[in-house]
Length: 161
Image 1 (tube, rainbow, N blue to C red):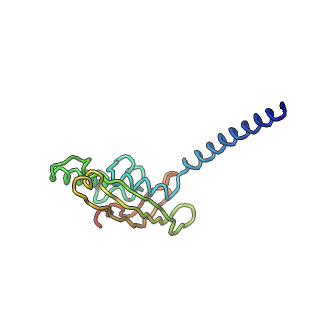
Image 2: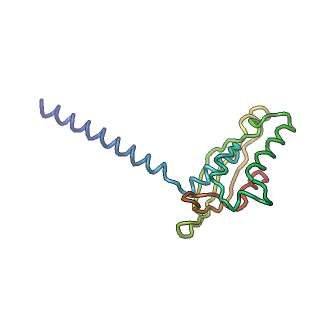
Image 3: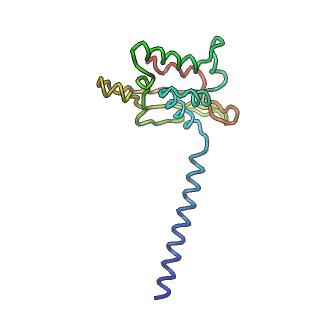
């Protein structure tokens, strides 16, 4: 009887230790910055008008155009559109569903092209107007800049489609 109890305790202890080890490994893997993660975070922030995340995930080259901050201009334009419709910014926000990213091309360790496929839908608008989801299928240029993957090019053309 004592040997059985001893085997149970050893089995339970090893199972708990394995669980803790896997949590640490998965936590570390999830915290790593990747081009795909950068595109996903950027896209979510783009449709939520999150200035801080947009600025953090946009490369320096794309942050200004004609001496104007592109993030500020994008959020300001959305705010103006919401006001002209008689709503607040919450009405303009959209949520991404079934988000998937694919690596199209990787150039060395500092550049990549990432394809984003998802559906976007404004929860509040769709509730009141029945507006359907819109498919998003875009390819982003991503660069490693200042130790972080950032989106480059003209990613602010997403809403034009």
